Length: 294
Image (cartoon, rainbow, N blue to C red; front, side):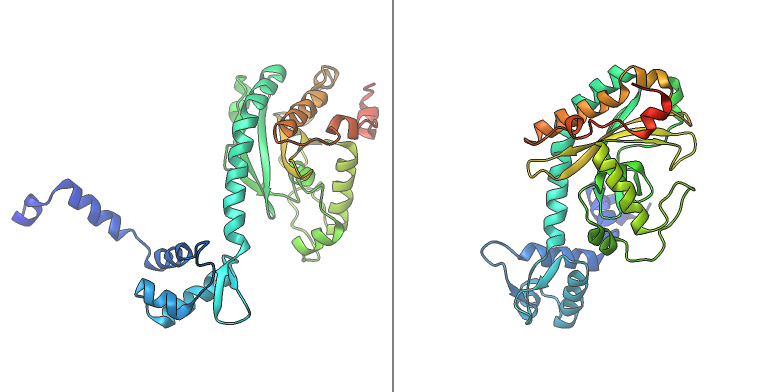
């Protein structure tokens, strides 16, 4: 061992390693965002260059990148910038997901205990759905289901996603999916935006959705929407059945009502004061009739 290495402290090694993993461009971009404040909501490139000690050409490139991602926007169609909606979206979605998990975890744990099934809370992030809370079933069969907190799946191809998009209009969907053909994962995946919209409207009118192997073979689900204080769909509560179909015994024991009740309870905790999903979806469905469920 050389004298220099022998005299170096563990803390110095740690600092050196931390520095070596930094990404300068990312660090500069984040530093630019932190310069904006309620006192100074609008800043220009020369001022940011001066404050951060970064060349103007570099600052311009960083500003254009942040603008293209929605984290900054032009304040007055000039050289001035202000924070964009992407910054707000990050913060609000994070806080919203925390509220959902804090308030919803006891409810999906109770739902798990009442049904014996793994339960989740799922939110939508653009064209993806994200699992933000999970209550794992104690049954060994569920060990094969590899869906955990943080898992992302395509919204259009999943029952959860279709329920989460229940507030969107056809024009909203066309803006979200401008391509002529949607990516297909199974024969049950909607092929076009129009087909997706029809599926969404059916689920919204019903007040819940049932899926049997529509996205992943051997996995069935029951999902119901959760609404927030504005009345918008904020999440879904869902149960997972690790079988290609749903046993009629589960339906006879009130599985759908239990899922919808948990979703309604979470909606109430989010200060939703409107009509419950059970009241909204009181009509019998063709699915239930086909199974002979009264």
